[in-house]
Image (cartoon, rainbow, N blue to C red; front, side):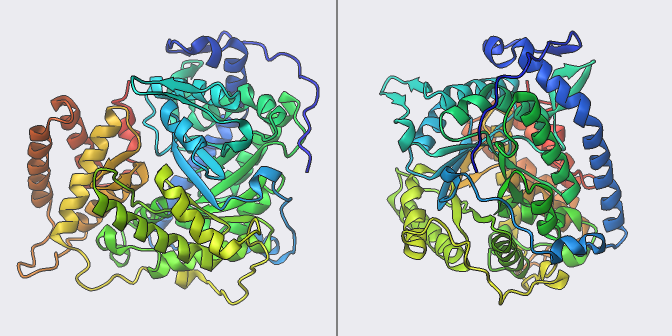
Length: 540
């Protein structure tokens, strides 16, 4: 489909009701017209977002009382009819390897130059949303779209290759649950989703279409098709206001909540004028299962290392995702392996490459059209596995998977292994959780910890498991049969804090804040929905 650009629309007038914190890039990122556009989106769509978040809370209360998700009776006709989504734009037909990372300039240059088909610039889980990171990130995105992004270090200058050699840029805004506290409309913080989306599409929509690609997005943490409908309305409105042909904005949705897994057809349908595909966001998905059913001992998860892509509920969801996408003509994109290379440790790198190859081989053989990596050194490994299956074909849309039959029971089958919760697992969760929070509070959203790439989603798994194990009085495997108690967790927190203090990687006040936040989200009586909500209050 052609994504024509109509004549420039009338100027969006500034509003006096907007205030925001100062920043060196404010003149280009937060121009009066751009700020007015964000304010307009918030005014029109903010109330719907609030109502949908209220609906999330109401549904969670029903889950706490024992209700479980199932396929919706009221949308059965959507699932049964034979509709399809439009064909993807040319540069999104082949997505066999996608690289992800935060909107930091050097990382962006390396990712765009990596040889991957797509680069997802992440304003969400891989980005600590300090005001400096958010605004500088938007400025970096403007430079990337225009081909002028570069970074000079004492060792070298990092520059973008010619446009034809770059990965296709996609942007992931923050989820519906988050706000941008530094940008206020009538004294109130605006939706971080609308802020991130609005600034990027306002500044870069026309330029990206003129450059031969377009304003392409990844949409995170949706919990229902109604939340997808809101995104579709936002995109359609933006196209109308900015003078783009309908469908110029394209999106891929991350299926990373258990409730969204029951509504994949409906999510594709609601976004059918803008959708390209779905992605199996595995880490958030594991967290979602722990979160949604935190009150049920039958859903207590084992050590994180034991929750793999072959675990029954994970296997069911990924198979259903491929089948659903291909039936509708949409791409199915695989998830992120946490293993990363370490150029100073050849043995670690060798093991990481082997594990990534195994993971990507399974995805390619299951019918996925592409996959994610978190490091440029993994692009060739992932590409080799998909090349072996795809050959010269751009995707596997013709692989329909008619043999796959997934019902509610399979999607909810945790099947916890006996003796699957250990002291080592508890120590690891606390160690990783504290280290990640300290990095996040210091402005780093994607952190290499113990040779694994950790972001907000993996940190959420760590704290969610600790909450489950404490509140369900889990007995650890081993001869001692020690129970996970509040006192045990606090003692392990104390020892981990001492270790971090000795390493001197973070200031003492940052470590103290990280410890307080981790204790709040893992030991409080009620299950806090996201650790980033209390942590955000500590960010500048």
